[in-house]
Length: 119
Image (cartoon, rainbow, N blue to C red):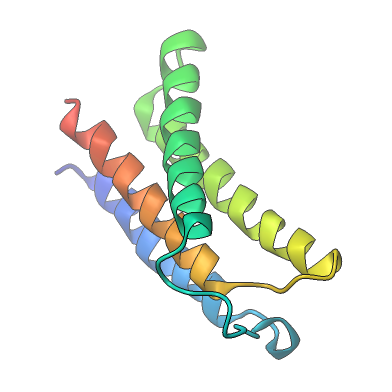
């Protein structure tokens, strides 16, 4: 694995957990009705994985951007989507779910692995 891929994995394993741990205490509620195994988590996982794959594909194959730039952009788009969605949930009367963000991170990781396996 070359150096740029190691940086991508380092980004995934450092930035996403840091975002989870830096969530303000007022947003860190996880009600009893937020189970780990739920349809909501499947959606978070699938959408995050799809965003990584589709963003990377479009940037690399349509816009001719190199993979070392396209993949981190796809990861960033997907992670930002998940965080923004959770803040939106909190703003609209629901709650900020760390479990949803963990499902997002798992989807991002699987998307990156799929891209690596394609080579």
